[in-house]
Image 1 (cartoon, helix red, strand yellow):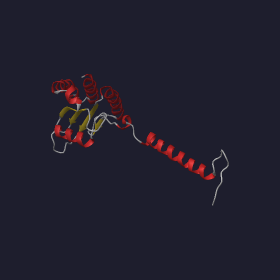
Image 2 (cartoon, helix red, strand yellow):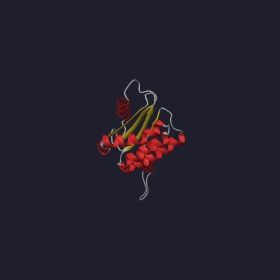
Image 3 (cartoon, one colour):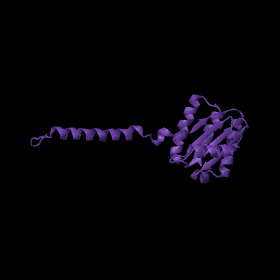
Image 4 (cartoon, one colour):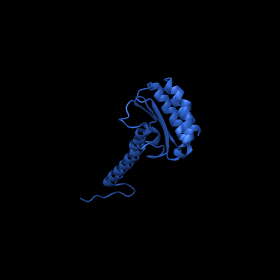
Length: 170
C-alpha cells in the first residue's frame, strides 16, 4: 500500500518509527542510570560473622570506613568470625580477600583488612595493593598493639573505629 506524506509533516509510519527509537534510547539511558550499581552503593566494609556489633555500630563503622576509604582510595575492611574452618587466621583472611575480590576501586585492589578469629582469640592485619606498601609490617604491628587492649576488654566497636582511623592516618 502506498502512503503519501504531506510536506513538512511526518507520515504515520515515520512518526511510529521515531517514537520507537525515542523509547528505546530513553529505556537504555534509564537502565544504565538506575540499574547499573554505582561503586559507592556496592561497597561493604564490615563483615561481622561473629556478631560482635549491633546493627547501629555496623552502620556507623560502614559510614566511617566509606568516608575514610574514599580519601585514601583504600578499602578499610573488618572481618570477624567464630570459625576459620581449621585455617590460620592469615590464610582465612587471604582466602576471603581473594574470594570476595575486595578492593576500593577495583577487584583485588587497595585494601586493608583487620581479621578477628574469636574461637582462637587471634587478630591479624594485612594490606593489599598499595596498602601493602603504605601500611608495612611495622605500622600494622603498631596498630594491632594499640587496639589489642580494647579487643581483650570486649570493646569491639571502639577497637574497630581506632583501626580504621589509624590505618587512614598512614
